[in-house]
Length: 409
Image 1 (spheres, rainbow, N blue to C red):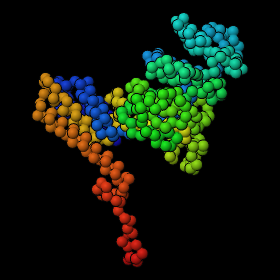
Image 2: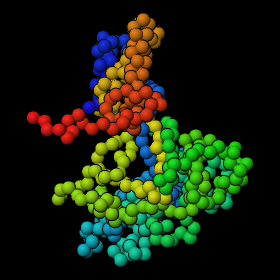
Image 3: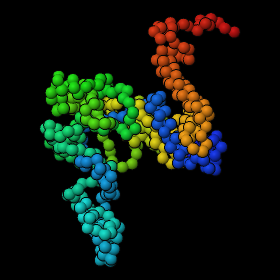
Image 4: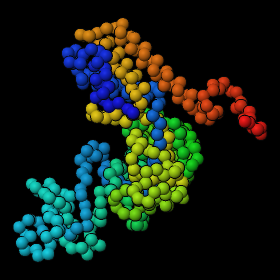
């Protein structure tokens, strides 16, 4: 079990003796909890995760980061739109189930005071000839790009791309003459420190741009098998693959445009337990992201693919019902941190001696977390059980059970 923000806030206020919020405000205490939550993740590296920056053709739909705040997801469907106004229903016999629409193109939104929906065609058969073959919001890739051809990298600093199409079906259905696989990508927003990077199951090492610029002057555009990566050249929270991937990663074909995973037969050879419901767990597939429960939504393949293993910050806690991503035993360390910060600040309620006490408890808690991580890691790779292992010592020799081969009453 984990504690929610409200529960931990109440605990801090109870320990401070200020449940009426006469000295400290709720917003102030919450800011201390969030600060401790972040510092705990950075100090102990307690959150480890994996992610994929796929070696697949890159789809892009906007060119500047600020545009991301203005992109909108429209609800598209394959229902014909036959009329623009509700009164037209009286003159459209047989079309009562068809949807009302006001515009056909995105730019028309600027000239409409009110709108209901968007329509591109008026009869079922026209879907085969529709200009915008968009079947659901999931088909739209909202990704940033700055250029459309690989040679343009020589004329742009810290460019993201290239991207020469807006939807994945454009390259899957072979409508794109040249498939550009992105070499530069943004890291996850919760990324803190890199642990390991693999490409096509093989571990690859980091490189420095200063060295590559001497050894390989065309490393930004040279294609081949990925043998390394860079994180020091293209901006903060950005990673570059070296070399630029020249082959698509293995990926699963998706049947349908929406819904959840129903049949994992092409992912695993294990027999399915049960005769109804939905998949809950797939052997060999890691849970990805801070929400480590729920339904399998996206399954990645490692063949020919680029995978990062990294330490991240905890799952965002934005409301009173959100839980901190840690057990109760570790949540008390956040309480110690918040009390230290509350008691140390100038003004009413200040108690520097008591604040130092809670600071010491906070630091001891971090040491315990770090020691437990080391013990778990060493025990997992060297011994079974909790016996202490001296660094550099050889593993113990296997020994048969004391009663092996004997008749025991």
